[in-house]
Amino acid sequence: MDNKTHADRATLEVAWPQDDAIQITVGGNWSIYSNCIDAAAIYHQLATASQKRLTFDTQDLKQWDSSLLTFLAKVKRKCQKFNIEVDDSGLPEGMKKLLVLGAVVPKNNTPKKKWLPWLAQIGEQFFETLRSGKALLIFIGETFINIGKLIRGKASFRHSDFWLTVQQCGVGALPIVTIISFLVGTILAFVGAIQLQKFGAGIYVANLVGLGMTREMGAMMTAIVMTGRTGAAFAAQLGTMTINEEIDALKTFGFSPMEFLVLPRVLALVLMMPLLCLYANFVGIIGGAAVSGALFGISFTQYFTQLSGAVSLADFAVGMIKSVIFALLVALAGCLRGIQCGRTAAAVGSAVTSAVVTGIVLIIVFDAIFTVMFNAIGM
Image 1: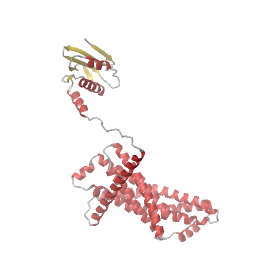
Image 2: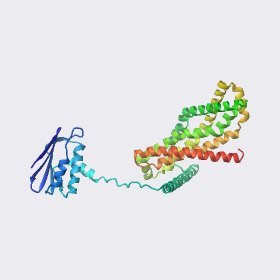
Image 3: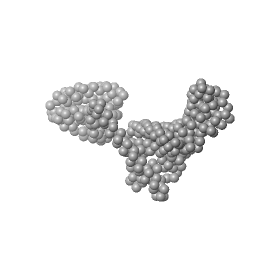
Image 4: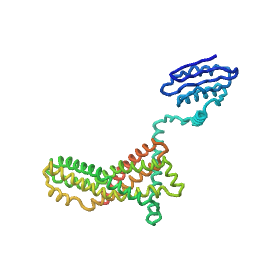
């Protein structure tokens, strides 16, 4: 009894040459794009067959791809289900190896996430936040330990990597910092001048822009820009190294990833951020002066005279202190998420996103803390 099906250039035949065996003959060219073999009838015959052994004949097989492998894998699973012994000696050696390789891949038995009541979800999120906070504190501690080793001259990292990171964090960030700072200065001046002119106090826009840039916006906007630019880059670089097992290789050769990878990035950003913040302050002040002169008739001389009496070195110092802390937070968030990255390509994207979100949240929280603290001490 024969059952023969033709589809395009692929052939499939089921026969019973022996009383105790079933033989499947495949031939022609099997292609995933042109093969239209209907295997449902074959599976039905296997389910109803009285024979308990299956053989293959591939003498007429010319070309094949994954479509044939998929079909044969399904046939073998059906035979296992119906207690039919499979004799694959008639298959090409390469095909047999691929079928064995496909059979050993474990199934995805990850249990589906159970729905939890809203109170349980809040508790779970709370403990996840605690775990993240603990990991961040441990990471900060290890970073300061390695900074101490650097001060004692015992830290080891490539100086070329450090100077390359300095260039990327410093000169490479100037264009975007310039644009953002100038626009922030113009926005502060425009919004402030409109309101102050209602009271005949338009000249005080210099006070608003100067204090706003030096104490708050210069450091905070620079930090946010560096979070999206440099913090994300740190997470992507270290995440990719985690996927490629480069960090595991460093550990194998006795190098500490904290010293070799994290420390130079943290130092470079801490070194460059105050300079970028100082630059952002001046660019923002210039942006405020441009708007004040062009739209509200305040000359540069009036603007900078008023500014010199309103802004002191203490105001610049507040911004500098904030910038150092923000730099540390941005670098730590980026490096931490990169080190914690999983082993898939999607994990790198998640690490970058998490680094940016973590960095921005920490910047806002610490900015609020420092604002209250400096006001309390009269600075």
